[in-house]
Image (cartoon, rainbow, N blue to C red; front, side):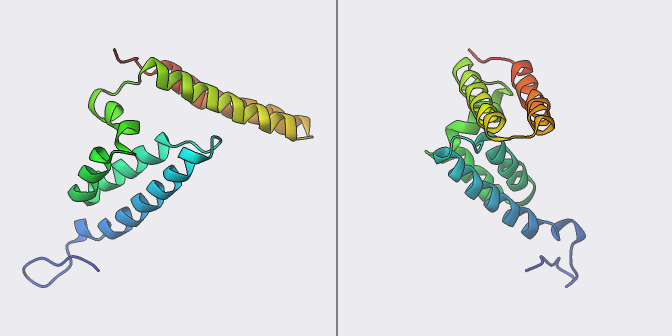
Length: 133
């Protein structure tokens, strides 16, 4: 499974490629689940998969960007490092809804506070991302 150079030895730079491909494919699988499960985010897993494929497989990198189902989730971010207003609103609503469900179902107060503090991180990151036209 390792890639060899012309002299019959393993290229150390290529040893990580199979691991990155597998990790990327797992992230794509989780992202697809996130399309149907509103509490599971789709875009972060697609971005992680895109990063894995960028370092391991040009073919898979191109496939995920051109994919009719998955591409729209990440193409704009990949090209402009921005999000549409609609995508930001959807992401924030999903985070808040998932957080609200967690806060309402957890009994311990310290866990409720922990959930709120943890959710501040993705909310603040999304709010800081520039909006596309």
